[in-house]
Each structure stands twice: as C-alpha cells, then as structure tokens.
Length: 222
Image (cartoon, rainbow, N blue to C red; front, side):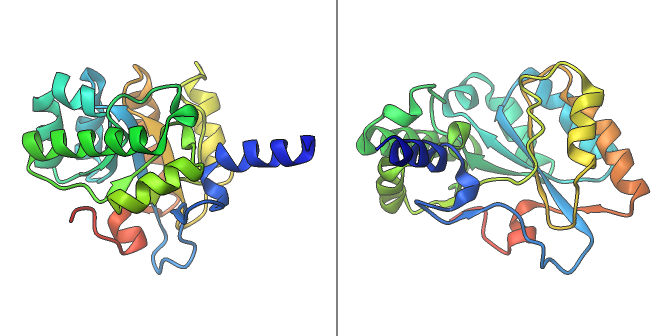
C-alpha cells in the first residue's frame, strides 16, 4: 500500500510522466535546432521587462496566465498578444490546493480563466498547463470536459525558489537539447536578467527559439 500511494503521489505531481493524460513536454524530432520558452504565473509588472528582452532578441514565447491576474493586469495581457506571443490557461486562482479540488471545481477554474482571456484578449485558449504540474484523475475528468491540450515541460530550473541567476542558467544550459521546452516564471524580479543571458547563450550555440505551437504543431487557440 505504501508503494502504491508513493507511486500515485509521484505521477500525480509530475506532468511529464504522461500517466493520467498526454502532455506535450518536448519534441526531439523537431527538424530545426530549436527550443521553446514558456513563462508561468503572470501577467505581472515584470512581464513587461521580459517582453522587452524577447523583442530585443526577436524571440517569441508562450505565457501561461492566471485568470485573476489577467483581470488585475488586462493591458499587460493584451501587450503579450500584441507582440506576437501566445497565451495559455494556468487556471483562475493557481491554488496550492490544486491536488485536492473536485473535478468540477477544476473545470470551473479552467473555464473561468478561459472566459476572462476571451473577454480581455479576444482569444479562446486551447493550451493548459496545470499549476505545480499536478495531474490526477480529477484533473483528467475536468480536461475531458474542457478539451484543452496539456502542456508540460522538460527543462525546469526552479527559478521561482532559487535566488542565484547563475545557478538557474546553469541548470538550463547544462542539459539543453533541440526540441526542449523551458519553464520560467514571469512574476519573478530576476527573470528578465536570466532570459537575457539565456538568449545570448542560445544564439552562441546556434539554437533558434520557436513558439510552442510551432514546436509541437498544435493550435494555440480554438
């Protein structure tokens, strides 16, 4: 029983395992020497700095947005779209109780975030990234109702809990391969500094940066 519970806990908190649902984590078969960038937990005032860095390097990304923060920062949400990036659903509240919610509550969290994005940005989001990477049977049932494609990652440098930009950069670059999907957070003060260094590194190593929808050949919106 202990082994079973441990197993369920592990697969429920790591979207990369594709145990309950299929998630898009990386695409090593992508024909170009390219990676994709993703940012979670915005929009935020810091998002604007990130957008400027992306513009400077002519790079596009995906931003997984929290519904209540879209309401708080509608102009920044629109700016993300205006600059040619795509957005995805990261639930309405990003609650730390995600693993304990009912399937109906999870469905409501996803739907409410969708509705706000449509009202403010005029888009119907097709991509969903679960907060904390939590996917369990209740999340699966909710997603069967909403129909979203689940997006994971395969490079996670834990920038939200690590203070040193150098450590974060090293975690990304030491194991980077074509087709990788990098997870960062646009609500952190230091992210734009990390991003600048990362984009310079990618250019020096002849990596292109492509949008996630191109990397996986999927539609960002419905």
